[in-house]
Image 1 (tube, rainbow, N blue to C red):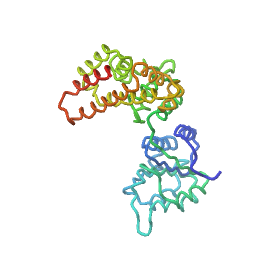
Image 2: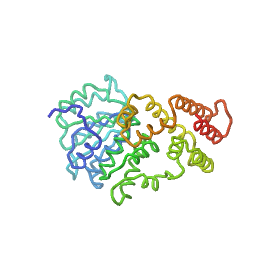
Image 3: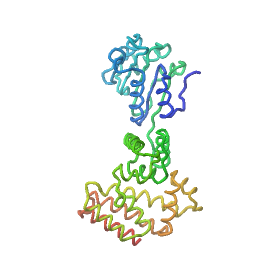
Image 4: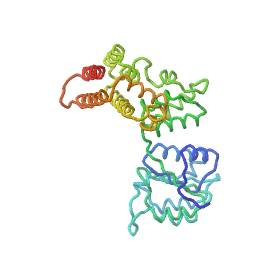
Length: 348
């Protein structure tokens, strides 16, 4: 089968590599560095033992790499091993040589006939590898692959990724737990996967629950932004101010900017829900970009406490607090600003 830019995920490619099914050439490209770093290290760890790496692992870095030297290394047979691995890191920094528009073009000739015992890994971060001669030759080769590592977007994409990775670890994760990780950690994929790895080990029954996250990811059960969000959504003034007081006593672990950002996201989604023609969880999930029915129901519940005009005012208060918390137009203490914002939201 001729090589093309296969639709392949990080999970499926990882499984293929772990199974010892190697391509001769890997181009790992894109804006999300985590997948690129993880895959190139997985290839090294799986293809070579530690003893074999001294003679059979060649590492090059784009800012100092000479492509002809890289190709020369690729054409050498392995010593005391079935394979040789050649890795070019930061290939986007490879300098141009006289007579070539793009030094990566020189790889085209090698891609036409790679040495079967060599695995060449080219890591190109920050975008798509731009070398038509190389990619054309790669497509004609039967054992190469181009993997695009795209940035994960917040919302449905991030939640799907969390669920998929948890499942790949043999774990189930419920909607609330998924939303907690998505909101608390965001699109820092390295940290998301690291926390999920830890939670998978700590879970006795292979279920990742909100309680397990609260105990092991540093999210306090009673005093955190999730609880503040819930309190404001229910207009529970007593609990909301109790949480703000806790934030003020523990400022190191509770800066107000992330809280403002999370509340802005919540009330913006609630505003969308308030204007939806159909107020079902499925409709709201589609409109706001979440896979969590639990989250969608929270937005719907908020619309019963705040009408559309109130939600517009709430978003205005959040914008104002965010601006003033950054020292623009105000010198008030941040937690005084937070208390004022909470008061305004409760009375919107």
